[in-house]
Length: 312
Image 1: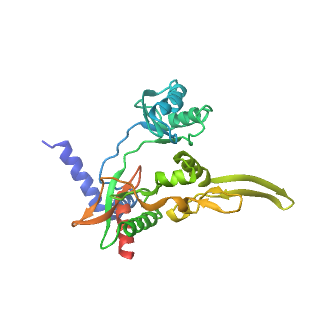
Image 2: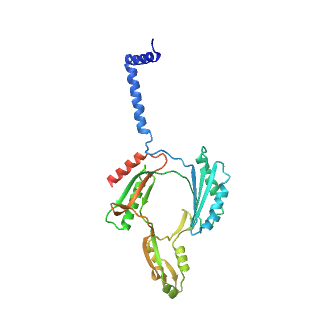
Image 3: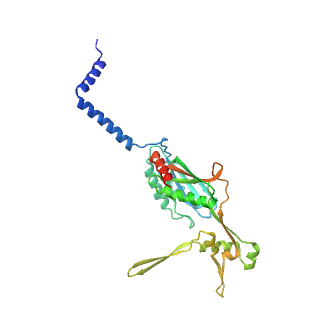
C-alpha cells in the first residue's frame, strides 16, 4: 500500500532532480533573501520594552516644593486630565522642578497622546514667571551597549575635560545618540565673603546675590531698523569661571572707582560635594556609558565606538 506523503515527496524531489535550472534558481533566491535579511534586519542583544509613559518636566528656578506644586504641577494635571487614553497621572514636586508622569492605556497611540499633551501644556499661560519652557517627551528604556573608561595620572579637572571631549566626539557619530558620564562631579563656583568685609562696605549677602544674578545674564536688547535690514542687539554678560565672576561690579562710586566681587570675596572654581565616584583598577576614572534607544542597531553602535577608540 502506497503512502500519499511519501509519493508526493518523491515526486517533488524527482521533479527538481530533472529540472536543474529551477532548483538552482530557487537556491540562489533563498541565498539572496538570506543575505538581504542579514544586512537589513535590526540586530539587538535585548528585547524591546514599551513603557507607555510620557514625561512632563518644568524647571522652576529657586522655588520650594509647595510653590512648584501650586504653580506648575496642579495646572498641568488640570490641563491634561480629560485627554482620552490616559490611565494614570503621577506628579512629583521637588525644589526647582515639577515632574508629571502620564501612563497611557495599552493599545492607544502614544504619539497622538504625546501631541495632545504638548498642545495642552503649551497652552497654559499662567505658569509663574521664573519657570522655563516645559520639556515633554516619550519615556523610553535605554539599553547599555558599551562602557568607555578614562583613567591615568590626571587631576580631576583634566579627567573631566577629557571625558567631556570624548562624550562630545562620540555624540557626533551617527549611530550613537546617548552618552552618559559616570563618576564625575559637576562644576561649582564657591563665593565666600566674611562678615567683617560686609560691615566694612555696608553690604548684605542678599545685595551680593542680587548683583550676581543681575550681572551674570545674557539679555536681548531689541533691534534697530535700517535700510540694509534689521540689526538685532544682545547683551552677553553670562559668566562661567571664577575669574569672570571676580570682575563683576557691585558698586560704582562718584569718583569713578568700582567695587568688584573679587575685591571683597574669596572665589574658588571647584566641584559639588557628592559621594559618587568611578574607579578603574583602583585609580580614579571617568566612565562613559554609551546607550541605544528605540530602533537603534546596538551591534553597529558598539562597533562604531570601538573604531573611534582605536582611532583616538
